Length: 620
Image (cartoon, rainbow, N blue to C red; front, side, top):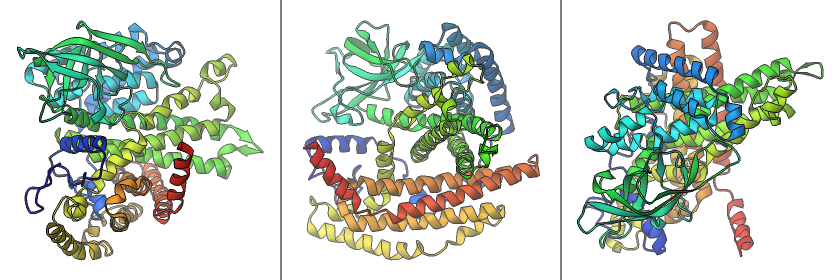
């Protein structure tokens, strides 16, 4: 890889790839080349990792306009009524199928085109209202939530809206809005998150009119029901041997085959399958985003699509909190309701605080998209996905524990015994995939870590680059030293912009001060990690993961505090509501202090390397 002189325009990758294997180098260079060219150090999330929180987009909390809220309310009222009267989520889970009548009903409501503009036949609703829809579905039926999310968040509509030509939008968006299901085909048998190993390939015809597509895709959600797909394929050339391109492929095209429908522990009505493409002739007009830009299409689509998953988790969390609170109030053991026992009370309090923060995160990130359709929210969406999916799993797990045997028992069995059929067992199975879907927690931590280190790498990574002359490396080192000589002291002293918090509720003011204090501490410890490990830091995945988890906790706390302040300022909020939200955030702040303190304390844990050595011996 060519590394330019540090005084010239920086390369897309600032990492030294000279000591990497060919496969590692190819994967890294592909990913780095597809990274967004926009400023990567702007916004609240990015600034947290730099120790200088920029709350300009957070305070005041971005409010949904009255008109936009009314539009969302009208749709959600219709959808909720339809779900209650025309769907049976337990039957869908039991039979592994979403009835055609349900699909037709959802289509008639416009649920397949929520964000598609009206001129293409969609509802034209905002990202916030789309996220509110995901919240509603998340607390009702994971199968329907997955179907509509995969169709709109990562299926054809989203990448088409972001990268499609006007002709492509006019051709495909009306079909999607009317209910023709779409899907996104990226994963392969031996590829996973490594784009350099992709085997599906498209070769341009001699006359330049079409591509011939061959390959096989695994775990294509909605694939077995889809009429149209976005397929990622390699389009190698002498100068770009690992180039990828995104194609719009209709399943009616000769050579497109559903090999097998995949079945899972949860989401039993998920239309997920193995798709095979054999000499499929795809017109050049169906190239999405330009030849060779497929990875950028994929990464950008996934960035935006990730917002939907924590939204569904928020809906699930709300449902679980409602069930757990009711059961803890009504179930009596040892002479008092179980909610009065400290062990159960602790779970309820954590569930309540995390549920509120989760909704705050979803609403904040959604509002950023509504404010600017081209907003760079990849870091916010990734933090929301990581933190939201893990808290969502904890909440459903705690709900099962609180419900005991009735949590483990199926809704059908409960109903047959005359008890209320709370489907915790179904939600438990369905929720487990959320920490894996659209980027596992482990991959999310590495993705966020790369963004977290970006400004530091740009400044000083070249000092460790063995491809550069020693003189150039020395100049980079001196430049970085001058920068950190000024930067480091400011990460100890309170910033003058702490005064931005003086109009907050007293409890929330302290929470925001904690956000700033913890952000400064995170920035210092990130620098310590870089100094300790140097270029080997990228191998210290457990250290990076702890730094990312600290950042995610701070991010969620900031969102929760600002969201609560908007409730305080709401003229229609009764005193009881103000007390409720401030108490939730005050308690959440204590949780964040405790968790981040432990993560900072264990940042450089000697057991990490011992465990790694043990695992290596186990692997042989």
